[in-house]
Length: 308
Ligand SMILES: Nc1ncnc2c1ncn2[C@@H]1O[C@H](COP(=O)(O)OP(=O)(O)O)[C@@H](O)[C@H]1O
Ligand SMILES: [Mg+2]
Image (cartoon, rainbow, N blue to C red; front, side, top):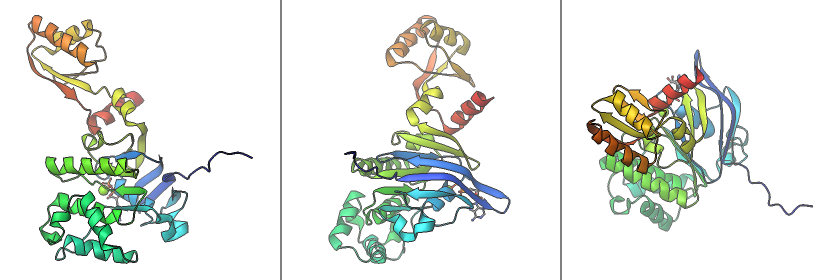
């Protein structure tokens, strides 16, 4: 006999997912595991297979091969029951534009057998749309619609949320609101998978990521380790890049990449401060010195170089 608590099934476990459309292999043997409490970033350029993967996870389309389990249940085998505690949307939420936000939520709730008005108020509060709830969705901004989509998903009291590019197309303010909202939901204990084609959009949110490219996962793991291996850190634009590189090296900063006259390197803030003074003393002008996050494209470049 053991007193160990029962092992709770993982929120997402996908194994060998394949989706073929004729000659196109949209998703090619994708394995994914998302653990409880993860804010998991599913990253990849347009056309990489993110939406198709999410559709398979949500049981909206049938995989050509492989299987997905949400909390241990396969949406293809177990049907709607597999989506207990799961909510989300792919390619943006859909609403009736001529109805109010609140009315749209009520209709959505009716599909699940009805939701008390107080619960609708609660989810409207969470996404900060309560004061606009009586207005027609047709007049909402893109960001408001995305947030209403999340409100709709929250009506189901999910333990797992799947969001397909929730921040894409938002202006900087809308993006910040979306990030704050996702952080609040994660802090409330909801496990989240969100897709994006822009690394910077998700890096503040996610603990783990998978990167998909032409249907294949090329990285899965911790985001901090990925960024470290990619040599993010700082970006320096100097009047003499080669001499600047030597000065950095003299301060123990090695592994400096020079990309189009810009230097990228990793160092702690104190070392960077010391090096910047030395650059000035050496007569090297600095037009930019700033923290730098690798873009997806730079990560791809790094990975291809490492593989070569
Ligand atoms: N229903 C479909 N029929 C044919 N091809 C599709 C279909 N859905 C997606 N694809 C193709 O599969 C690939 C991946 O698409 P998608 O999953 O939408 O990528 P992402 O969401 O990463 O932008 C693309 O080449 C796309 O054209
Ligand atoms: Mg997509």
